[in-house]
Length: 421
Length: 140
Image (cartoon, rainbow over all chains, first blue to last red; front, side, top):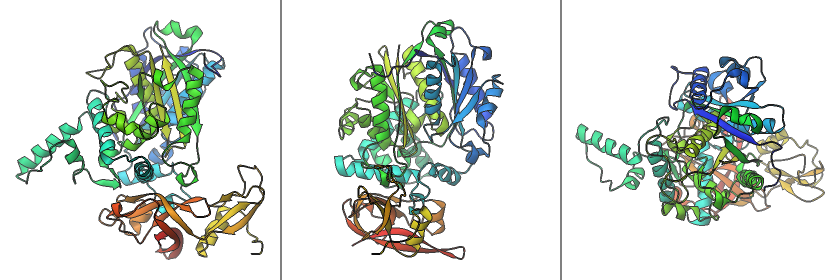
């Protein structure tokens, strides 16, 4: 039995998402949210109705700057018939809907609510890429990092430089993570980029061949990823080390133990939840190769569940950049510091490995509508734990225990959740 | 040095930078040093600070060379063909700070290394009729 347990058990009874992609102007936040809602209600075994739901918790990073729209809580609630129930928005950069999800768990465990709808939603492509980059930069320290030239890829590249220096990590190690996540995303019909890096390399070669240009001498994906087709964004990170700019939404239903079985005979229980924080600026942190917010969130979640890292069978981790996945594998305790790269090299984190990571395709391939990402992780949990993941990405064993890791900004917020059947 | 009479605010810190001084605050109770300035020592939970000037010397703790920059750096003329370096510097006095790294070959970031000794420099930029000063570092 774990420590600081929830006063009441909480179950995930349904989860769904919109197709992730570049949808603006055809779809905006309200359209994306309704798509996610419809997908989620279709997955509640005995059905769910607005009258069953007590509140709507919305995770969104920056509709204010992306879409000139604040106050999303009541707007999203009204669209799905939840007016006049309590509705509010939570913000923690890329961990926004992770926080909304955790607050919903705590509200149910407190006894105040029985069922809460958690929404994650973000429409980013209303702005051009330079605008998106600038909005994302507000999740870092705009007083002292931004004037020094920090971009988001720049901050993670800075972390990568420290990790490379201390542990001998290489660009090939990061490339393996991108290659793996694209192999998974290819199997996810909801993903933004449903193609492997090998597929993209082949289509690039075909294009060059067609235009009569000089054929590149790429032997494998690594050669392709080291070529000018994959430009450096912030050394040592290249384009394919970065997640995507995405529009999308996700919806998760949580219910108290005394009502969960009204909705399904197969609830997925919240076994542990944790949240941590750290200084916003990298320069105010003691260690640049690790995220203290992740370690703290993980410690709380493991303590609550009574489980250890070795008990986790599969995980969705926050790969906003390839280096972030590598650091997460270490901070979550799956591997010792400096040892995750070796595990990645050995294929342990592939779909058929000993610890499959990001079977959904991750933020790298599935896409990263920042405020929706935390809730979207839960959709993959729902599918993998029920054995219903589409195409060829369902893992080949029964998933009893799964973990999600949702990181905000350059790591100043983290939410970790452990699920059990 | 006589006691400096300036509030321990971000504005005071930036005013010092404009005067080409890298100043931090030192907790009179525990001796902890803060750059950029802090009024409250989170360790002691007491606001009992004094200003202290940094030598500006330190070493590279981590860095990157950025080809797709912020609007401010794009305005300064940096782009894919002319990248710039962002760095986190560990000052000899202990605190770490962020700054642009200049005087290095940004196009060959493999020639820059963690641990390389640097000193502070104050980068002046004329932008829309005003001169602003930002903290930077260069190799010694």
